[in-house]
Length: 233
Image 1 (cartoon, one colour):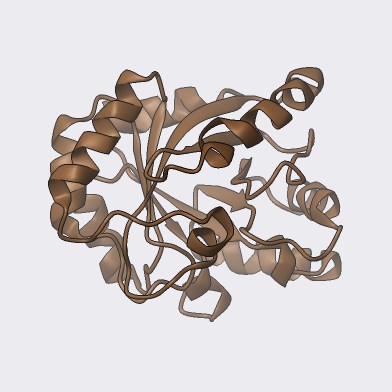
Image 2: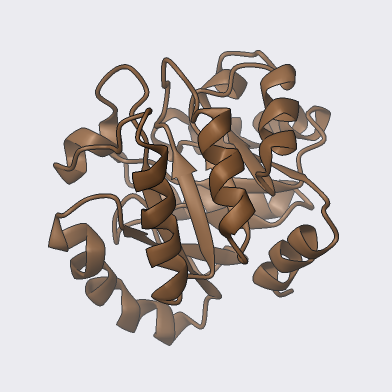
């Protein structure tokens, strides 16, 4: 299975996809089967798994059980080098290009690269862009970086283009877990217009109407996390 080829196919054929984000710090291994049943009801296309802060050591168990109980591709959305498992279908190899902290631009990636090569997991180079959402998110706090202001669409576009020119295969616009506001539709539209690579948007998506609006604005994949946990889907 080549996950990136699927992402490219989405963009090429103007199809849309939904990913449910599972925070392994908020899920016990014994709850995975029940959670997968809930995911299936959403008609999601992918399961993303990862979080900014992990206080438990059962990440690999969560991934293994997700694979066991679900037919959907399981893709790691890592918050640290601890969030790696050969049982996953792919890993988004994130570089926080909206920030200026070298640890999250290249430092953590250097630590993870030998492990990923050894286990042979598909890695998808992803330009990760944080966008202001109304309050400080876990990602912002952990990475010690500032998000791009919501009104700075030009800056967000330039950052996305730089990511594409640097060779990233995806751009991920992120408002953050539990965001008060999602990424502005005008920003998504502008970036979509100028990108040649797939675009993922997540954070602050609270209902199905928002998903449709974000798809229509140009996102190829919309990611829902907190709203799913809260039973909105």
